[in-house]
Length: 342
Length: 275
Image (cartoon, rainbow over all chains, first blue to last red; front, side, top):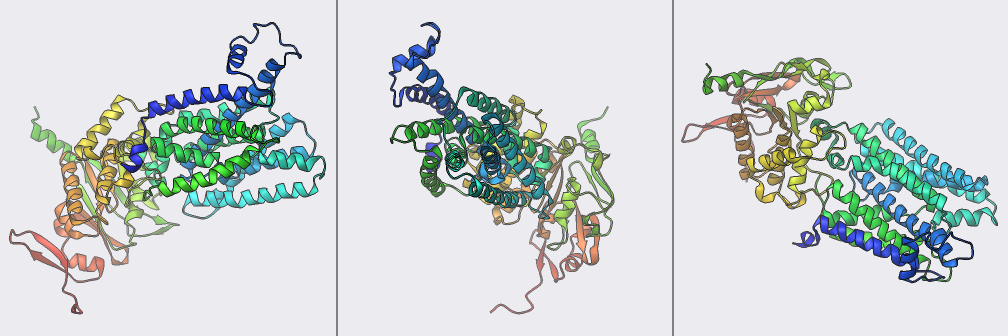
């Protein structure tokens, strides 16, 4: 028994998570400085145009459609995207404790966005810079990792990721020291901690679009991704082409992570802890871990953002809460973890 | 009209693997003199050689991971370099020395990995795949571990699961790198019996071992690595004999006979008596 005892039926777990997420989203739509009751929320959701066209004076409607709904959907999408990225990267790196940060994706996307804020670009350009930064970081990490003359390709990639990641961190710090301490620095600092406070419907559309494009290759490879848990030689002997699989998963995960970073800044720990927890619930199979992680990540991020905007007078950035929750949860999970010899 | 015995005979002569003047190694440096070996259906080739003599390197070359430095490798008459990864996977399946996985799969999920090379991109395993998995799990007698995860299995059980995974690939040849290493006596016997049984069903098998007695128990021909990069390939009865083994391993090897007349190979009595 032990670990087996908590290994639920996969189908039952997925359905309960979907229901739970739907209930949580509806509840979150009502929570805030301007509270809405559940009937109010439901009525406005099912009949968006029943009371005639929206006007600026209709406060509940504006709060719901312009502020709450984009924010709730964005937190759900970011949670799902970060968790999916974590699942994919952990498979590629054969390490259940790997994270999207490992490839320098988050740091690269953050540098792109920080540069955009520093140069006073508009929001769409800042988002594009974040995408470009994340993708550039992963390409450089991959190139450096391939050049390193180590027999263990995974180790060389990880080493390259750590080195490039800390260089990117240094560059972000450099931009912060030269940024205007009154107008730009607070924006950069606040953004680096992550926030859903300023999500607009446009941000949400970009996030959903790129997030979905990033997750499609992960979903398509949900079966063969399991083979990545074997050694390079074994994968080859099974008849799979490792470089293609690795590239597709890394590209998809990078896109999903960059979309999240561009929309809400760096939010750590979700991509690390959630897939790990999902694996403990449904076992190791990628085809199960991916959807369950996305649902759990969405739920976690929604809870954290809703908590962050309602527990204090000023908002608590989600990155702060994910770290405070994530670190102890990770320790707890690791204590239960069983090692598999490779 | 060909009867069943003739069919069997024809199967036996079907050539699965042939190397022609094969030289392998890293960075242009060959590890042995050219090797010419041939494997037919239902045959077992045992590879014997000291640590670090290049048994694993030979396997990596046969599997197309390393390009041959000289000569060629042919699977069922087709040159290795002309086979796609998928075609090669139909020819040969591989079991590494210490099979395992980075994630804690159940035996069923782990065996299914052997089917993935056959799936089209984006496809899910179908009923044929699940049937094949159930079949090999039953064939190796590990049904009771079907739902058990790898971390909860012993080394011997995991070795059987790895063989099942390789069999699920439905390749004609099985290559195993020291399948009995780090197994207890009972599990060594079970793995060797499994290999004999599989060869009896027409599979070609190549495996490496450090115990020459394994070659006597489960082997038709042997490839032995001699000092100075020479190799020798021939029937087990000619290759796995005390003089040759003494030269392979650089220690004195003796043959003893059981009451039933079976040969047992052993290291000669210790030069320094055990106190």
